[in-house]
Length: 145
Image (tube, rainbow, N blue to C red; front, side, top):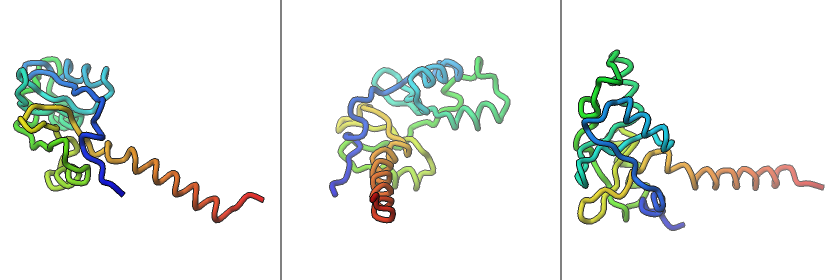
């Protein structure tokens, strides 16, 4: 079975981004509108950090910070680790497990951001395969007469 590359998984998905002087509420609104759980924090084409729903929860809500006054630069993960599009999803998952995070920016050969990969992205095709396998087993165990 061929390994899925990160590029295959993020193909067609436009990166969702904001800037460091944006408030947490503004960043969360962008994430909500795009139905994503992370935001690339950019300065032009330069990646400065990432902000995730986990950051909003643990660094803003738990610490009783005002989301209308707290800037992304105060709570984002600075200089995040990145992966490249031609690498495998298995490699991205390894990076996430070793780093203790769920999102990794994806860059091209020149270091330009081309997207974001998340642990959740790994589940898509695998869930389809699991459903097919469960259906197959059900058919084998309970054949229809």
